[in-house]
Image (cartoon, rainbow, N blue to C red):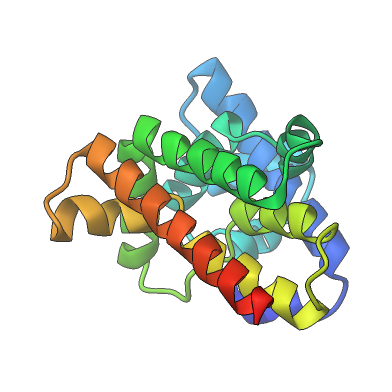
Length: 198
């Protein structure tokens, strides 16, 4: 979906429309049926132009809908982490999204490839990692600006993008990739704690 489109106007309504499109695609996927963007529009009861505004081609929609089926809602992850300290929460979130990336690596790569091949602006994905991190950071003592920066920084250390770099650029296997990302996160916290002590 065009980032400028989601930023303007009724954001919640646009996110709801996007979710309706994804859920409709999941109906077809779960039934093992072939479908196109026109089928999605008809089934969802929205215009074809609206579907195209959110997803420029069927490959991007199918890949993202497939990934969305496998991903827990951020609030569900947050509820499971209550009672832990911030570092433990973030490390658990990192482990969840890294495991998800490893378990569905082919589908994630297909999605990224479809987006790049579409030669359009990158659609705004669900951003589950960032939303989950924002939930755990809201209870922390950091300033609003620090919470925003930390949610961005922590997001960089989890998911498919750093996994691709670790494997394709650094030559690491899945286990080594997850270990190096966890080590990096722990170093971030060590630096964060030492800077707060000053």
